[in-house]
Image (cartoon, rainbow, N blue to C red; front, side):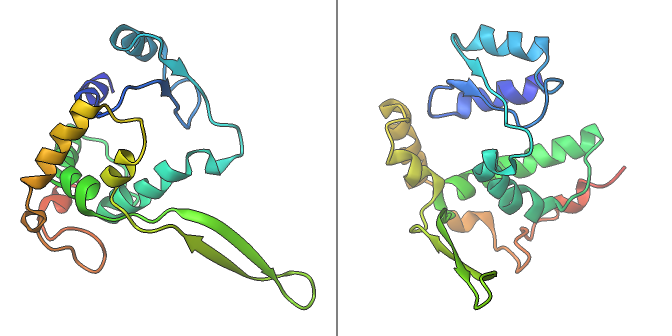
Length: 181
């Protein structure tokens, strides 16, 4: 787990202010808290509220579109699977963050039926934009990092990532490797 955090930190284009795991305290034990406090001064730890599954709804949405679309719901247990998954992420993070538009739910309207019970639900979404464009619309990104990432996006050809099949997974042969023993 420590290696994963150390790999993620240099890629973040904004300062880390808070850690918000969606599971209980065994996830962030003393060693992980010490790592974060050593790397980032003043980082705070918060928790999801019990039985409030929408506390991390944007993370869960991205887990569905980025992780589950490639891997399904299989459990990854081996070092080889982890290395293959890391390789997959290294190949797809540019495309998913710079070029793949994402819509966010803005409003959910329950339309009642004749008997007063909900007849249907109408969803209204915002304009689809890639995550990097959404980030640039905020003050969260450091200007120097923004300029570096814009240069990286400008020199990246989105066609290099290959076609996606109708199931959402890439046509690369990486995914079958994840489940080899």
